[in-house]
Length: 267
View 1 (tube, rainbow, N blue to C red):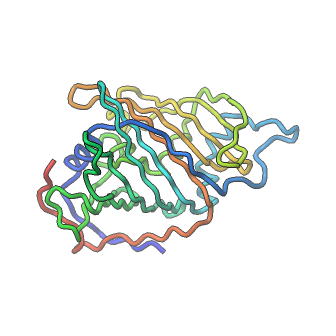
View 2: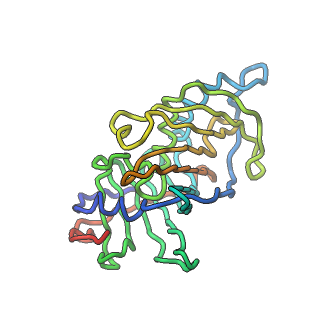
């Protein structure tokens, strides 16, 4: 069950700058539980690639919930860092919870405690944000106010948003069948037009992707390659989302108004 309450907060852009500051690195490989039924044509060949990929988000909604693992790799100049996350997501309620690990500092030491993120339609809640935020308080960001629509701001792409981008997939080609943690998936490649509301936050209006779909047509893995300019410097972002254990519990309770920090946040 999802409990929604009105929140407050003026932290948006400052949190965005702090979380995304720089990023890039490795790709996660831990997935299980995909597979079943069939998304193939009667001949056994893959269904039309474009149609199959564009319907992947709808099939996730039909599946209901899943576990999620994320990896966001960013590179700017000679700097490369990676932000990783893990949790659950409810595709029908469009809510989820992730524990996000920020990259180590230059000495290799872990800089901060993991950040807990709650994802909800139009909002991102963050706990253990640090930088003056009390330990027992949440920061709320209105995602509509973010130039990127929270595709990269939170250090993890909202799984529903990641799948939703594929609704506008173009030039989709079938790469081949692959093994993903013991599950047979079909690999597709193409590009997706960014919604007009967030396109201004990126250098290009379309984002290349690689999508991996199981026999039931469910998205098990998607990798988007974003590009944007931050303070005059080009930043390349590779966001990978893994979905597995469909049907797993994904209950999210959003913070009450009194649990949300509304003060100044240090960058």
